[in-house]
Image (cartoon, rainbow, N blue to C red; front, side, top):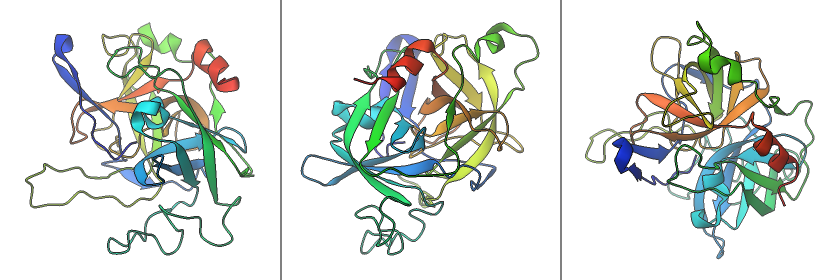
Length: 284
């Protein structure tokens, strides 16, 4: 998810949506999904712009959120780190992780292995404020292929449709993964935001698929409560898997929340839709 807090006001819905950024509450280190990476975006002058999370679907095609890659984000190029602790050793003085090179370089010996650059970004026509259909899917095409033993798998079109009206489906389990904030605090708070810059994952449960905010385009989940975790700043674009931590089946990408402190429910843009699947296959 982008580390910039972009507030999107929906007057008619009396709600505020913000792009999602990190895994919160009952999270664990994600060593199950090596294809989930930390994506750093750069502006036209090569300066750090923002960061998100994403999932490799093939050696060169990484799925993320549209608000991370759209021209309005300011992103022109990107770099992706696939280490579980990609930015964990970030030094606030030098503003670089000396182990991985995050967010400036790929450490020696890691280019094309655990790190890759990108000069090709796509978005699915991200439309910002237009809920419920935000077109919030994006792709980062890697310059160097990353060969892994497994990749994320897109769920077939309509996979979640049966959950929209099915009785007893509110307990359906999903797993979220990303590199975002773990604690977001008020600007005037004496506490600081907490960001491990590591790949974390957590269990979430279904809230609904049919509301003014979802309506077949988005997935709303609950990350609060014992044994559950939600998303926050920096998790944007990270995968939402259908099932427990062993699942590789992606049904959505983390998209937005309803407050800047990452409390309450989370929303993902559904990728189990034919139009999205077709675009991912042929983004041009």
